[in-house]
Length: 368
Figure 1 (spheres, rainbow, N blue to C red):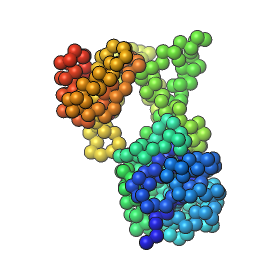
Figure 2: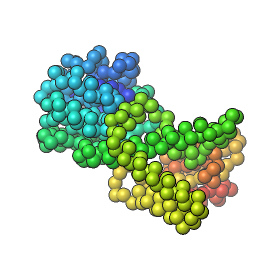
Figure 3: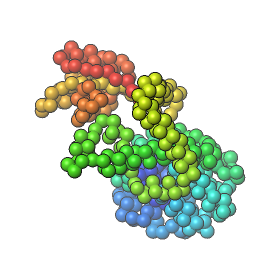
Figure 4: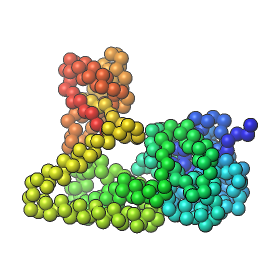
């Protein structure tokens, strides 16, 4: 039986992560890749992820069972046109773009509707490029699939099983529904994040005091502004109607809360924050999905050599497994200077009791 062959047109953060996840879960799979910067593919070959480098978007992909279009949204359309003459009838074409209407229109125009299944893994980081790719970022992430009016069901089922095998949660929606949803939960938040960064930039003092002390909530909400400007330019240009519609609704809500603040409307202000808090905390009640309960403990320790190691050793010697550990550099919202993630409620309780018994102050924190 021939090996399953997958080709990647683009090998950045998400393309690289999918390739690594496929390699880990299907060791015998054959992976081909093209990237404008071919040295990235050379590195992937060196890493044991990719088997073969393709030097151009064209006939080198004609033997693929799956072709993943992993370039920015507009470039995926261009690359698909280049590939069209060489696509075998067995090949399933997919993409990883966060806007679907554009690629579906191109697929229809090229007569490839029976072979195309849109794909969008709802995962990533603010860092870009193959060097930052890792299979772990896909774990338990929703992977949205969008079919055409002529997508073959057996082809859809095979692709569904393939993406599920790399640890994601496949979810099938229409491409128009996908674009409206992602505008609300991803695209508008990126616009808002960038606008907040620009707000501080434009209103900071000459000595950049705002920038110097920016921390806590500001850093959390603007972290995604470190993402690729070119990618977000393309997203705004290709999903402009949905983004504009929802951005208008968001602006209306800002005007509304501004009026409440101007008039010192106590009830409206408290309702504004209370409604957001309750809805945000309801995310944890979802039966499945990437937002999971986290079990955290904050510990007050002095900034002295060996103190972090002492805490870690104490927990380890008492068979309490540390999932993650880090230093909290700012106290704007956190009450402990050492942040520890554990596996479950029992571990949090046991760790807290143990540390308190040894003279440490701890704060338990359940969050999402």
